[in-house]
Image (cartoon, rainbow over all chains, first blue to last red; front, side, top):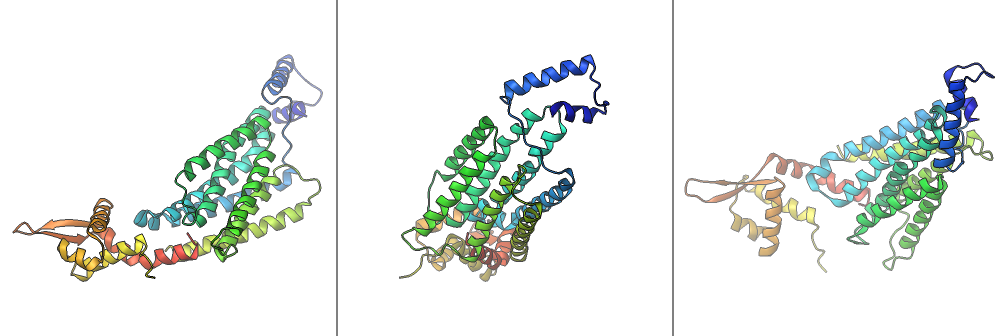
Length: 253
Length: 91
């Protein structure tokens, strides 16, 4: 498969491999064996769906950056921690979505796909974990005043991203982040002061978190999931993000 | 039980007091009207100076007056928006 991708990229007719090509192919194989332990990145799915993925990711990135920019003034006036965590979580989330798209794109278009594809797992793992931890904390920081939360979150995010790189899989990220979501829900549900867990804002945060996990899950081609279902859920996620952006722009003008 | 004022609420109250005093007030009357302890007032005042919400001006006799900066006026204008934002997103 790697040889075919490489030959298609260079325009060489099938069946024809020069001596230079042969040594490059051998070098690639050695690199894959050493760096990626022989494991291959999955393809991104049908190429005609790439356009939709790019449009979707661009929309999410623009919304997240919009939220970050719109809240700049009120944060600069107040220095309020809740607003800081809120802004940063959306900035990191937007960047995570962009990296999520790049992850398989680099894998299919660059001939050192096996190495660079996995390398993107590190920043994506760090940014997405930090985004989710900050999103959770911005809603509960007054109840769970924990001085070392940010330092601990950074440590967890770094460890998780390194773990994802070493396992060459985004599934470790997915499972740990899902665990964090359930842990956060549990903390809120069983808090001694009976916090209203499913308020409007918290439901939006929960959906944001859940849609990120879904989008991480569908990075690999899902043979059981039809692309219509994936598009429908991504469409709903756009509505949720759009609603968040609308609220921010209405309130932070 | 009286609810403790939030930090932003205290800052707004102090800035509003300055604005209502024709944007020029001596420190002692400000302390009295702000309903804060001396230590608390000193801390808030230092923060307001450091963040550029207020500045000090001196008259010919050397008396120190406190006035609002542009940033201080903007804070007063935006306060309701800020509080609304924090409440809406439960931050």
